[in-house]
Image (tube, rainbow, N blue to C red):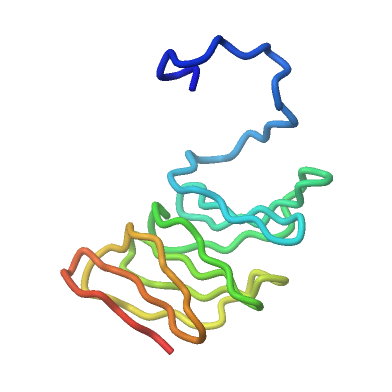
Length: 129
């Protein structure tokens, strides 16, 4: 509201909890589950514990992540500008699978039941079971 001049400027301590310096810019919105924050930073997907602000694991892709991660019960799904849609184990950061498209992925995946949907710059919408 403050940004649009619809509310007064908040006090400096308004809601501020912590900050963490990342190696590269974060170009996507994070996802949060069970106290772990999942976000892209450059070409890396990070899992950050929100209690102690420690990185739990790092998964590296072939190019920048602009896609916001989507969470399933056991995986984090994220696209990369390397053209892959990745499924990463939510606990270990190990790659479960990767699907190659014909161009970069900057859109955020959507998960419904057991299907993952994502758009690619190749002009296709992918549905993966």
